[in-house]
Image 1 (cartoon, rainbow, N blue to C red):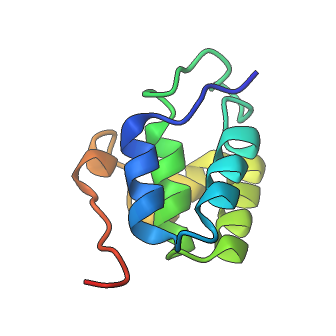
Image 2 (image 1 turned 120 degrees about the vertical axis):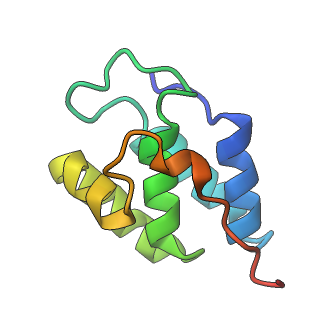
Length: 102
């Protein structure tokens, strides 16, 4: 079973996605971007932030782009991290998306 979304992940979902698409974005992250990538099996909701933030960053607030980012993670999660600019272990902690209204 995948870990739930962390509060920081939920905050980024809220910043990026419209109220109409937030639940779907959260569901995709929880169900498909959980600890199913190789070597992530034992990670908790906080340890999964790097992967989930990467998918969110690449999504740009678009559900289809989020799905594509999650598919990339399933193929090779290292490509997801590098594509999002989170190759450095702590880089994701400094990323705070702006809401579309800003």
